[in-house]
Image 1 (cartoon, rainbow over the protein chains, first blue to last red):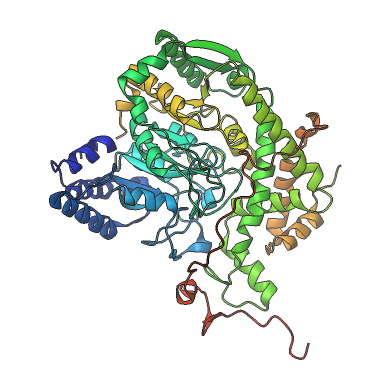
Image 2: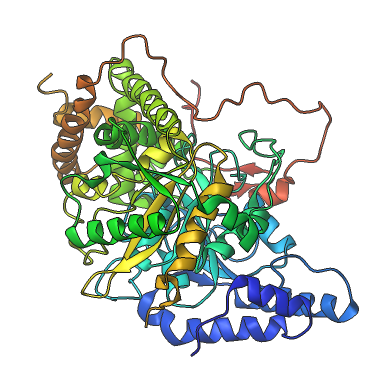
Length: 489
Length: 100
């Protein structure tokens, strides 16, 4: 099976009538059929729906009707984004069989742009995890080494892109859930600024942190999807009414050449400390030298609260999760315990039987952080530290345009290696969670491989609504290297 | 500070969270939540006097829309995923004792 073309190429060829969307879709389904049994990237395929969409796009092309910028592009969608077609389970047994009465705005926007959604991808239950091992159904495997995790929580989406099933996928990122799996699977993953992309129809986890974003094989494809996804949505009051720049146009040669020279890359010492794998550090430092060769300047910056970000994050995220997940009570939808003694038993037995251990753990921690006598000490304290973390970034961006560092302290780890110790799993999020606390955009892109052949991710973070420069910096690096041309398997 | 997380506290949190826990789970969570709470206490070392809590990373306030009636979810559609229904209603076990 051949590697798929980029989303940009497919859309151009389909729109021009040189390729049929149906053939592109059938080829993607063929690649999935060949290797998804091994990797288990998908919870469900939506082949029938996808082929219908593809045929409709081909009909539009033949009739000379306008088609969108993603015409005929096969896309995978993380299963915490609601779709009226197929099921939406969030990787949880408590939502087994759930059919959403509406689609997420992100899904609607993709489809309106001509994308063909081929399936729903696996994730850690309710997006809580860093390995996709917390899925209530099955773990997903890393296409580069099936004995290893793909990262998480958007592990299915990252694996689907890395395996060449689809050129792009949707993920969600609450503490690194797009960027960390992108790094571990050797693809591009972008968490947009909080408010850039509507969360309507994204099943809520940590509402002040959650953001929808793309995973793709190239920076240009990530930009293409971001342009389609971005913009105000009246159905999400946190989506911001701010003009959407021409993200893809900004990646053409002329604008790129204009920003390369004098680009200031901030390098925080806190991102290169204890716990960072040596091969990862080596690859990231080599990437910094590539930026220098391109005309950029490296600037030392400091993000002093980086070590405390994990603690602040796990209080804020779990507190918000404990409220958001209160709705799963067996009354209106989803799983219900078969023989409840009374209404209280209906709630607590349904939740005990429907949720997996990590979800229970986070609901418990969040309930504790919000409970009487502890609210100020833990929850409010975390929110104060959160402000300091945001201020650290504001100060750093006075001296640099983007902040660079590793996405994950280690490459992909083995299945089962970290499941026994939740805290060890949380520590792997050290470089990604600050962006969610501060609301800023961040991207992970491939910057090398370990000797064992595992991908390494470079993370770039930018100021609020600084996606354009972030994508330009990422594209400059990508254009100067060839890591993104390697494909797993 | 010691003893903030013991089995009794875990049971109390589980009641608040409407999670029925087995005795094994209570034991497991007592250890794990205890370790997590101990870990997050490192925030105590960060001086935050006079720092306003940051609940929302991007300043957006008082988002209003026109006060115009629009269609909402149809009753049949809303009931489509109901575990148990009775006519146009979600059915649940009796909430009040008879005669109460």
